Structures are given as C-alpha cells and as structure tokens.
Amino acid sequence: MLRHLFIFMIMAVVVSQATSQRFGIRAGLNYTKFDGPTEAGVNEKFSLANGFHFGVNYAYKFADKFSVKGELLYTQIGTKYAYEGQSYYKVPLGSAFIAKKGATNITMKVSNAYISIPVTVQWEVSKKLELFAGAYASFLIGPKGTGTMEFVHSKDSLFFQQGLIHNYYRDEARGFSNQFGPSVWVDGKVTRLAKDAGAYYNLTEGEKIGNLYRVFDFGLTGGANYFINKGFYFGLRYDIGLRDVTNDDVDFLRNSYDEVNNLGVKAKHFDTNVGIQASFGFRF
Image (cartoon, rainbow, N blue to C red; front, top):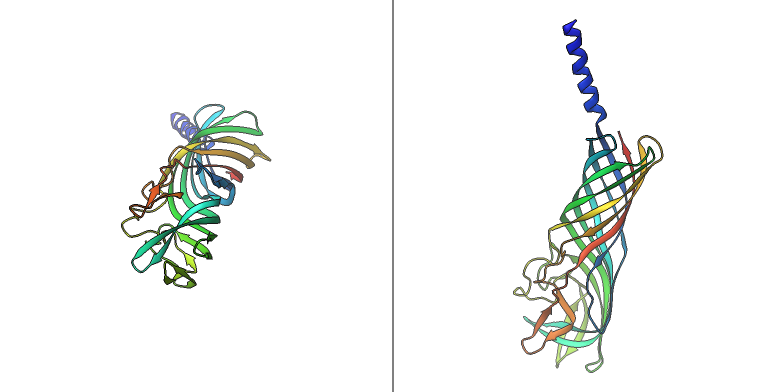
C-alpha cells in the first residue's frame, strides 16, 4: 500500500509539473522605425519599415492565471530614412576630402538583424485572451542598409547620383563596392566617385571609431494574444527601446560641418528602436 501511494505521489508531481510548463513557437512580421531627434531646417524623417521574426519560447505557470515566459527570437528591426535639404558631401581627392555644401536627397532602408530575448509575465484573462508585459535584451548580428543619394552643388555645376550599400559591421573607412561611378570636377581636379558607397565611404580611418550601430539593445514590451483554439494563437505586441542604438563617435550631422578643421560635427542624437510585432504562434 505504501509503495502504491509513493508511486501515485510521484506521478502526481510529474503530471502537475508537465501541466505548468509549456513550449511554443512564434513567427510573424515587424513594423519598426527609429525614434529620435531630426536636424533643423531640413526635411529629415524616420518611417516604418517591415521585417520578420521567428523563434521558440518556454512558459512556466506559477499561479492559477499567471505564467512567466522566456523567448529566443531572430528578428529584423530597422527603419525607412529620408533626407531632403542642404548638407555637406565630402568628395574624396587622393588621401584627403574636400567638403562641398549643396542640396541632398537621400532615401534608404536600414535593416538590422538581432537575436532577441524577451521575458514577459502572462495574464490569462480568459480561455481566449492573454495579456503580457515585460522587457527584452537584443544582440545585433547583421546591420545593413540600402538606398540612393542625389547631390547638387550649383556653384561648381556638381551633380551626381550614388547608390548606398551599407554593411555596418564589414565596411571600412573610405570603403565602397569596387565599382567606380561618375567622374566629377572639383576645385580644378577630376576625381572618380564610387558607384555604390559603403557605410563609411566619407570617413577617414581616424574618424571611424567603431561601427555606427551598437551591439546591445534593451527595452520594454507588452501586448496581447488571442487564442483561435487551445494551442494556436494570434498576437500583437509593442516594443519600445530604452537605449541609444547609434554610436555617437560615428554619427555625424548632414547639415553642419566644421569647415575650419575639415571635420564632421557629431550628432549626439538619442535614437531608439520602436515598433509593432504581429505574430502567429503555437504552444504545446
């Protein structure tokens, strides 16, 4: 009798532990942008860009209606960026640069890949609805950007269009795609520009102090899941970053320049990641 009772108690513990633990998967789309100050006197803006996410999760139910969930996600976070107005363009001449002020039009999309670890507390409002809130930590593994730029300097009749192909981890100072674009006449000399400029094409080795985007990010997250059946659900969540994702040492203003010392002016802007995730998930 005692042996049977002991076996029953062990089985009860195993069953209770199994019902309090859940594993799951989640995937869907991101709609994100950078949130931060813009330069005065020009038309500069950040707008929503799309990406995707997928990953696995584990939840432990510690009370009747509450559980804590941890996730491991691959997620693409970025922004659409537009700039129109006066700016400086540093034209490379040999081993030096000559800064020219003109009208610039830039459109580009930044897509930064992260490994993200959200931890949230879940509240089971009903069998269909679940609310959650918590925080996340993310690690940047693949920051990239693509776009185009047009520059016009009427005084020197300088006009050109340049592609922007940025790999913020791999690109070096003065780096480009190894294909030459237009030849331009600047201060009595002819120089050939890159067809597609790298992320740090207009920087000297001394100006490139690290990479533009920081490796570590963290912030708050919250949202709701609606269960279509016992395991399958649709979820929406809002993420707001709490850390400046840009490196101030490599983040320069476009509309300001130190002409006396021939150096860029650092922006010192606090840019954060914000956005919405729309997901389909399944828990086992």
